[in-house]
Image (cartoon, rainbow, N blue to C red; front, side, top):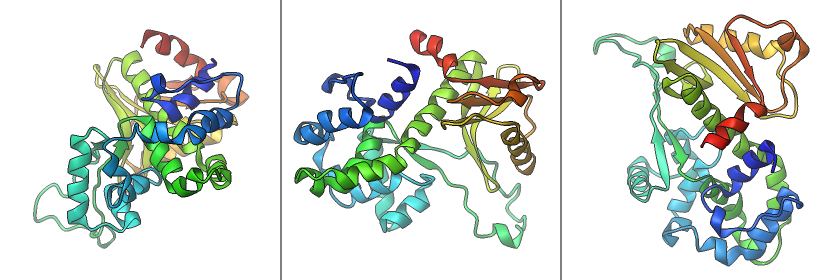
Length: 281
């Protein structure tokens, strides 16, 4: 199995590997149909406890499976009151279904009486919700919304939606594994995504030597070009981040202007960087 296939299959089936039988000669869609859609009852039983597949838990988890995953936005999309939402989150944390990733943004106020600009008065620093297992993310993002149709043997709308949106699943797994790679290779004290009032970054890490590592991950079928480097520099300036090391992870490699004219302190990694990492882990 190629590194690309490993990413794509882990994004769908991570956490239930022993319950399925993948055939690498088949397409991803064919494996989904054989292992999940045509074997629905067996896979449905893996989502436990069963009540999380019913409202309001299912509404919350479906809303958490797409978008920016910030808690307030999840509650808004699922039309769940904040008080109920807190209870749902508490139970899902106890079940180990989700995790809460706290924002690393510095508080807007440095002292209680500090006045904020008008544009920032309604801004709220928010944590994000992440699924503990990729399969749960796939299930609530792609399977659960089409439950009735799938049970009746109608897979058309499922596959239409999957074709349009499945890249988001693999991109998130790529981002998380890239951060794990950074943490290991740079002996980082911390590594993860970062978001603030100005924007978001896939990677922000701090090394043992107090070096700041900032970067982006692109799981797309095109090369990263120098324009992406300029965009990252601008975003860093707006968010007042001053990296010592810049990194790009790209599924499909890099343009000649980046590879043939190396930029100091800019590191470029494609899928081949993960081969040894996956073997080690």
